[in-house]
Image (tube, rainbow, N blue to C red):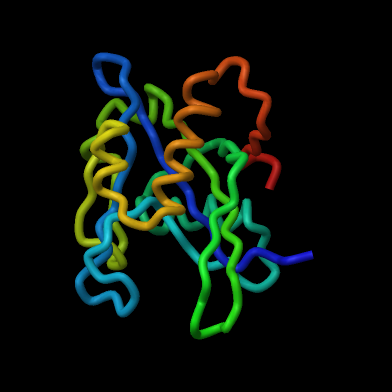
Length: 163
């Protein structure tokens, strides 16, 4: 079995009109890989850590947000790593923030030094902002398979409490 070495996590909240807003993070200009690139939360799986544990940890480290549950998206991103000379599989997750989480959405996000800014954007704006195909594709899957069917989506959810 191929053990994932990276994860991708998407964070959404509703605006006042009930539309979904996606959190987009801009990588800091000082980052050696993909400086200034807009992206969802991404991160490396640490030794002894599961992909789910990594997703919860990376969301908190990169944004200050601590979701209580994550959707396991029915999508796995991939890319070729020249450094590793390997295809890397990237499990994708989604966090739906509640009204309680979002009372003060502007103050909710506390960026790590890995990112220089963030924006909450609608679906079309998010897709235009993200340049890596796996980031765009996972956004579409999250929106169509999960967010459009929140009450009936047959996909896995994991809670922070079970970790």
